[in-house]
Amino acid sequence: MEGWDADVAPTTPWWADAVVYQIYPRSFADSDGDGIGDLAGIRSRLDHLRTLGVDVLWLSPVYPSPQDDAGYDIRDYQGIDPVFGTLEGFDELLADVHAHGMKLVMDLVVNHTSDEHAWFEESRASKDSPKRDWYWWRPAREGLEPGTPGAEPTNWGSFFSGSAWQLDDATGEYYLHLFSRKQPDLNWENPEVRQAVCAMMRWWLDRGVDGFRMDVINMISKDPALPDAHVVGSGGLFADGGAYYLCGPRIHEFLQEMSREVFTGRPELLTVGEMPGVTVDEARLFTDPARREVDMVFQFEHMGVDQGLTKWDHHPLKLTDLKATLARWQAGLADVGWNSLYWNNHDQPRVVSRFGDDGEHRVRSATMLATVLHLHRGTPYVYQGEELGMTNAPLRSVDELRDIESINHYRQEVAAGRDPEQVLASIRPMARDNARTPMQWDASPHAGFTTGTPWSEVNPNYTEVNAAAETADPDSVFHHYRRLIALRHSSRTVVLGDFTLLLHDDEQVYAFTRRLGNEELLVLGNFSGSDAEVELEGWEGSELVLGNYREPAEGLGLRPWEARVHRREVGR
Ligand code: ISL
Image (tube, rainbow, N blue to C red):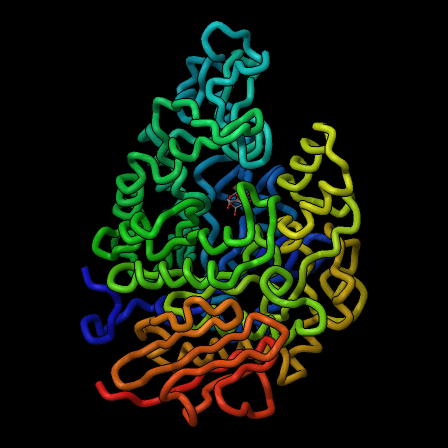
């Protein structure tokens, strides 16, 4: 199958030149003063998004939920949580988004449900419940009493600390939960589960939504034997069972079935699969248009470059590692499939704090990072506040943690005797809480996010970093994102050009070209606060398309955190 090369595929899919904006509804805009963002709040801010120029909005979950994992634990797939609004309010939002010329993509969380979902309540009631087999139930390990140490059916750990198994008193058996104990995993081996999910998806599409971001969708096919995981090193109590549930035996079959059952006859959708641990080779299969699985995937390799065995083992970025991994994904999906491009989402720390400089060079480094990312080949995703250069949260004390992942990890480590201050220090740079502080709209109290008490502390830098100030300032991070998005919309070379990495071994400069026909673009980014020399033949005197310094550059060299895009004509 051919990739989306202009010469062979003149009609590219609509999403090839689109930019997606992720909204985390809890933290976006609160219309009713309860301190939690809501659908009406989103509606009131659509002009901001229209001005930015994004094409698609992706909404993190707004379904009824006990909010154990901030909405990724769903109690009812076909409703709206009262904290966010009503179904009627949702329809109004959808109509408004469409009226603003944008599309709306829903979060689809079907690897697991909430333990308060009616399906699970029926399943847990008895061993012969008709829905027993909709989840993964297993007895205690042979020879061990349920509830005693080591009696869990496998040694798998959960992503949120502790075992991936929970003993349920009703029947004395354990159920599998890769995430929190309030997020039991659905058993996709059961065709009734798959049919129920497909029916629910059609119901949302019939309502008019434009696609799905599919949460941990590469975990839905497990090895039904559920073998014990291989223990690496001295390990903790529980091991990584990923080998038995990441891109499992029937994953492609399940996605193809879903596509047939749900997407047939609906060509204008966007589907993106979130896939921790996915490899380039697997991603080529998932995104090959001929196989009809998903349009693109979120891969995680570039999010792992600054950590050791676990995310809490954080170390500074080595630029050559970041370049090598992103370039491998560019090459791997060049002739088939399609990349998604992201620095941020609701699970990742803020990129300007992570790979840039959130102090003196905040604006410059945020705009440099944006330029480098948006000039790659693929569909860029902007996470709310990224377009303002929002920074990590201070997380001054454990009381500022709101996320189940950080809190469970903190408790586990402190219970194991580690120094609480050190545990907090290891959580700080990588916590998901960093991404979830309220959106900074203006310099009024609580950053204009709410008139009440916000559910999570507002970052104290809102008086300076906010949408009102940035929309008024042509040199702001906001206007730089707007220019990058406009450039993508107007340049086929940005959308489709071939990608070639330059200066592979340079630890300071990220450099690459994009080429389509006789147009070539050079992208340069300085990942440091000192000047950088750049020598590349044939680019002296080329046209400057975009940069993040007002004062013209002399030669190709880069000033602190500078980014530039150059253009030249080349022979075919
Ligand atoms: O955040 C992570 C790093 O610690 C990931 O392990 C994350 O849990 C993983 O990327 C899956 O994320 C998705 O599914 C989770 C949910 O908590 C995340 O918010 C969601 O994006 C379970 O639904």
